[in-house]
Length: 121
Length: 157
Image (cartoon, rainbow over all chains, first blue to last red; front, side, top):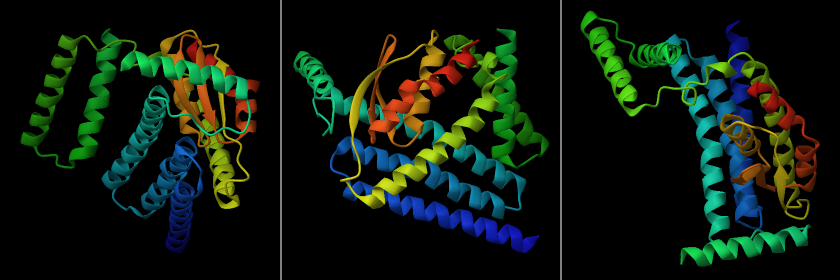
């Protein structure tokens, strides 16, 4: 029993660290602000989730387990909120994403964001 | 109103007990006092209502969470794959999408679920339209197909 828990916990921690490292590499490799934010999303959900689940399997104390669950729930609430706020602030201040398609959509949005930027200043 | 107060009390009590770990009489009394203080202040602020304690969600939310976890894991695998494939393999897209939710709570749940899934971020929410930035064009297509939209609308009822 002991060895099963140890191995599965180690596996979870390994997957979590790999996903976190991938997220970091994504920040360096992706071309612009918005795509980099998607890479951070990976670290915030599966990376943090897997590491916390790995630690939960190790914990013998119920209180420690409960605290890890709380941290996981808070992370899952905070991560989308912050990425939404960052993206909204960037778009409203006129930073346009590099897009591959949908040029019509882009120009209309560009107009909108320029208007909001100029009304602020 | 009464149900919401009881639910807030139970949540606070569980939170306090799990975080403290000391169960002597004095500490428990101090904990009860702090919970009552918080309840009193939140009543004064008038924030104990349907919005802060969405009890009507509890019937269906568990099934939705399980489905969302499955989707998050699938999306994570896709994004990690595209990180290692490099920037030639991605097709960033910005698009307005219509949503069908009526209540504010439903709209926020939908927008937050989109942001929580890696590869898609909700940028703005205006009336019944959301602006979504996606890493891949097919993510937008699967959002437009409306599977997640339908599931969130089911929660509202």
